[in-house]
Length: 115
Image (cartoon, rainbow, N blue to C red; front, side):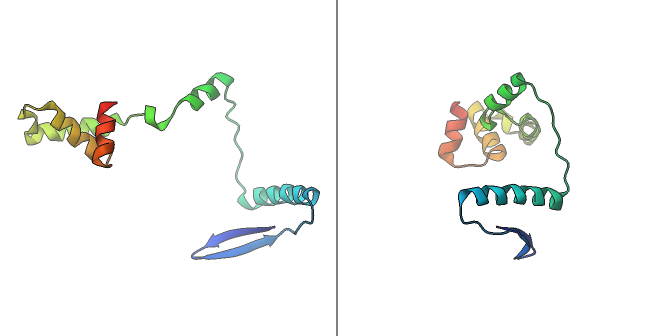
């Protein structure tokens, strides 16, 4: 097993730990690699001590349930300043804002507005 780091455009071998002939040796080498990596990285491992309730809430939270409100507010203000708010069709504003904040295909935009 080797520890490799990308420097520039090249992969550089930092350390060679060894090779194995069976599962037991492989497990030992994997443990050794973890120890070596922790020494090379020199980063602190922080325990945030989340409760079971917090872990459950984080598992339920997905990116589809989070909305960026700030960009919509700013772009809505610009939309109104330009004078587009005088158009009678409210859906036009929704389509424009969604395409600016969440650029994607037209089909995906209609799915987003429909939800």
